[in-house]
Length: 214
Ligand SMILES: C[S@@+](CC[C@H](N)C(=O)[O-])C[C@H]1O[C@@H](n2cnc3c(N)ncnc32)[C@H](O)[C@@H]1O
View 1 (cartoon, rainbow, N blue to C red):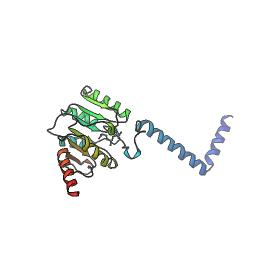
View 2 (cartoon, rainbow, N blue to C red):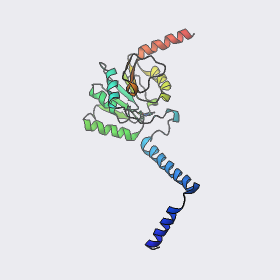
View 3 (cartoon, rainbow, N blue to C red):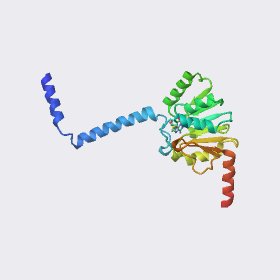
View 4 (tube, rainbow, N blue to C red):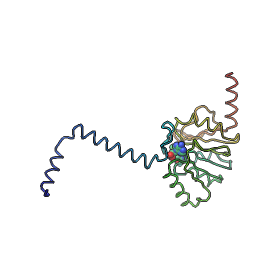
């Protein structure tokens, strides 16, 4: 086929209407491409997590990180971010003196990125980013927790935190409050709002509610 023939074929293809089959093919290819990006880059490691427990990566903004730290001011010891994304909250926690500072994150790309940022900031020895399912880690020795997760997983998270955290622990939730707990402190507005919960008070409230229900 010479250049003229090729040009004619292209013109012919261009002038033909797409038709239903063409549209279906384009939609199919686009969906496959989107799924590949999602599966390989954004959600690897999530295959074993039930769909209703999957939370997408939406990093906290500067104000949200700062609000978490304000609600943890004056505290010390172990700090854990559940679903740590690119590690920004853990990195700020270590800057504020929390030790150890740990991030649990299922997406291995984000775990690598977190380590890179920590290394660039000169804190790689003080932080620990672990590629683990947050539902499978034990939190019995953790005094400070932050969570930026989706509302759909928060009822289950309440049960896990209540069962595992020590009395002195404080949980800070960003973007969405824990659905049935009474916060000890709230700061920020709109999507920057953050809620702090002291586990001892939450436990007492849950116990007294159970008593009145009997
Ligand atoms: C909304 S992002 C928050 C990221 C980070 N905490 C921040 O505020 O910048 C939620 C993160 O949780 C992670 N995640 C979701 N389910 C998880 C699970 N079961 N175990 C570990 N990480 C999880 C996601 O990959 C995502 O990076």
